[in-house]
Image 1 (cartoon, rainbow, N blue to C red):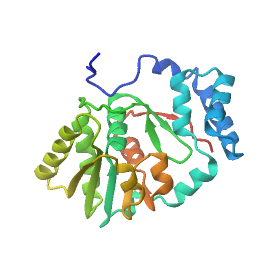
Image 2: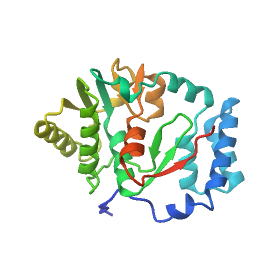
Image 3: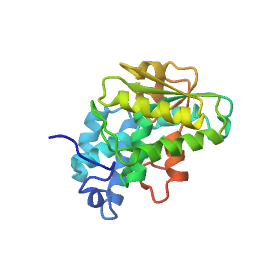
Image 4: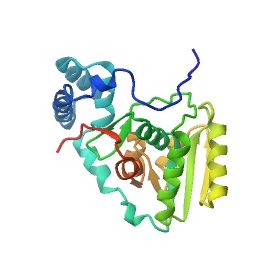
Length: 240
């Protein structure tokens, strides 16, 4: 069945699954999962144990998986984080779909889970398919205005070539850059993750594998969603 969604919005049961009746249980489950990961237990087995104990639904388990990392990893990521105030004059490498779906979800009323590494992660799944929604252009405009105020020297967007409609998104990014005189370039390649992982620039991503490998990163998705999207639905599963 073709994807006819016009918004990057919440799933039908998200108001129940991430609502006030479930939230305390989800936060307790997040603490238990973090405890297990801190002691070296494998993520898959730990997530199943915690999910079964709290009788979590599939979508809730996925939220936990995205939000909770081993504490040592979360702390190490934070040590390499570059704050927004320090971005002036730098080059920024943007994990394109990772950032865009987060902003689309924030603007469309979708769930964003806050993790113990400080990142926000959406529950959208691009996989091999992305389609433009009504939040796409506002998300890119919001990002462009925010980055322009930070005085970046260059912004390089990286997109996955195998994902459908990547060519259309590249054209949209390039058109905005020309019209607004933003210092953007767009790179459409089969797999951007290795490029981002070994980048010597600052990387904008919430992808855990890239975060663990790159030299420096900035929490762009969280900054934009928290500071610029009134009413963004953020479910805090990070632990103190």
